Amino acid sequence: MERTLVLIKPDAVQRGLVGEVTKRLEQKGLRLVGMKMMHLGEAVILEHYAHLKDKPFFSGIKKFMQSTPVVAQCWEGVEAVEAVRILVGITKARAAGAGSIRGDLAMSFQCNVVHASDSVENAKNEVARFFKKDELFTYDKTEYMHVYSDDEK
Image (cartoon, rainbow, N blue to C red; front, side):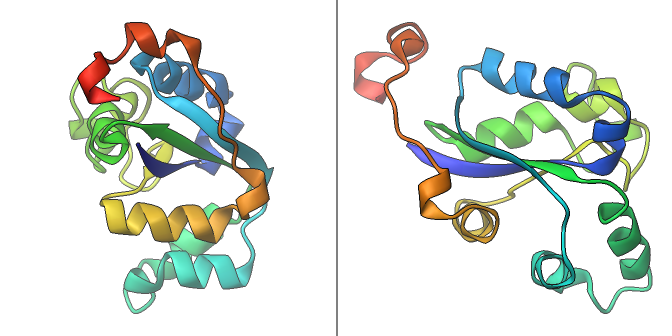
């Protein structure tokens, strides 16, 4: 089973979409193994967005991501990274497909409701950045007998 990070961004928190985002991921059949609300400090912002720190729009991302607490979630499932990316939709929300989280709930490139890990390697790093080991849980999800076939578990 893979684990992946989802950050419910300030725009979604302000618009009351935390439950909707969570519901969609749960309905997909993913297992929520960690969740917390937090303000993103300077160090976390610089580490998480290191690949963008030299871009002219970085200060806007930083201001936006620190404007309101975010909800960090860790989700688990078979090929969870890819499944979440499909469910979330493309970054440019106004062009995201209908039925995706961004396609249904957002119009912006920056205010696009969620961040989702884009690779298995990045997911491992991002989950570790936002969660301590004792903040993540392992438990049996009894509905998995109806989500995965025996050879997929």
